[in-house]
Length: 251
Image (tube, rainbow, N blue to C red):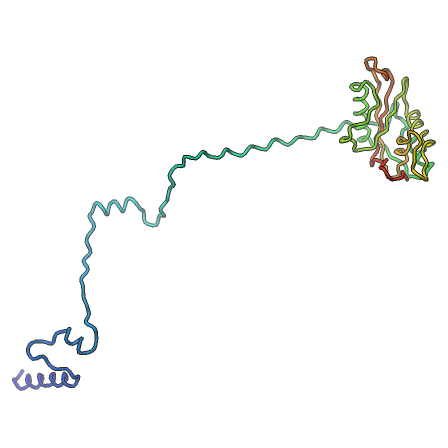
């Protein structure tokens, strides 16, 4: 390059600085901080951050303490409080006793349904049907009275009175005709118009209770131990649905 060309380049560079309103430094190169201040920008503070390398032992400790992608598990310190005892187990459900075996309308009970229906027909209510299952219930109570109750005529406890119930005892021989006839004779003590009973009439009103549909009876001999009714025979009849509700007429 010739001396003239170098001079022209220097003059051109000086002219460019003059157009920008910058004065060329008198001696030496243009300093970066001076240019920044001339252009109206704050001087840039530059600092160098040097990362301190971790010791190899510390890196190995971090790698073994926490696996990548596995959450940390926080464990509570053991408590000195006693644990609650487990809840008590529910007691086994009580099984209902098996129903007694069915009882047929035979032997001393033969004709019992027909005897009832004769009395019911006199007042115009529907006939009854014999229920072997209901007969089994009646037979169970008759056996209890004859063997465990000194042959005393006692009705079931109130909690067990699911059905209507008539009882009969005879010192010698009990029969369907005799039992039904004894209960039906109580009609003389019952006044239908007022619903009043001058004596015993509950056996009769149960016989003719219009809502009753089924009858079943049991028979047992009293073999007792010298009780007042020992040696006789008992008949128990149960009715479903039961009757003799207070304040209601039988039909």
